[in-house]
Amino acid sequence: MPTIVVDVMPKAELLDPQGKAVSGALARLGNESFSGVRIGKRFELTVEGEVTEAVLAEARQIADEILSNAVIEDVVGIEVVE
Amino acid sequence: MPTIVVDVMPKAELLDPQGKAVSGALARLGNESFSGVRIGKRFELTVEGEVTEAVLAEARQIADEILSNAVIEDVVGIEVVE
Image 1 (cartoon, rainbow over the protein chains, first blue to last red):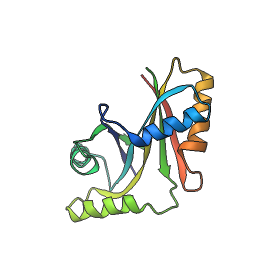
Image 2: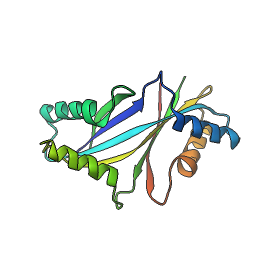
Image 3: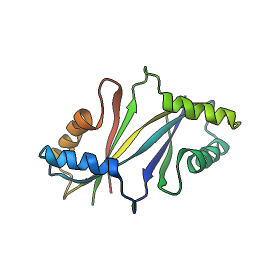
Image 4: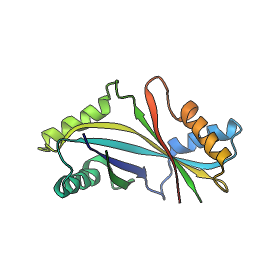
């Protein structure tokens, strides 16, 4: 069955304490390759049937209104897989 | 600066209560296009400098050992963006 993947990340101008914690842990573990970590969410929506334009539009609306909080998050990607 | 994106999802054979809750909410709101929702994490690692084979290998190791819990999660994707 096709799946629509929605990626949501904290807005760039906001602190991301979770990411900061991981970033600090990596530094403490001796890792110097990565200067920053940000953590967001990845939603996989299983589509009943075919992915039509209407279904995609619906996914976009859900991504904006339900899966993300527009005050603190951005929807950074919506793509169909399979 | 280049970014390495790591996607982590709950294992397919495990329940995903968070996803189930969103799926139920969508159904209650009258949405019938999506039969299931699973929620995972998306990590953006900012790379200091160039993305060499060594940096990628390090990212893979971090993804497996630190960013995901192999008991309940799978690393479903590692890709370089920008």
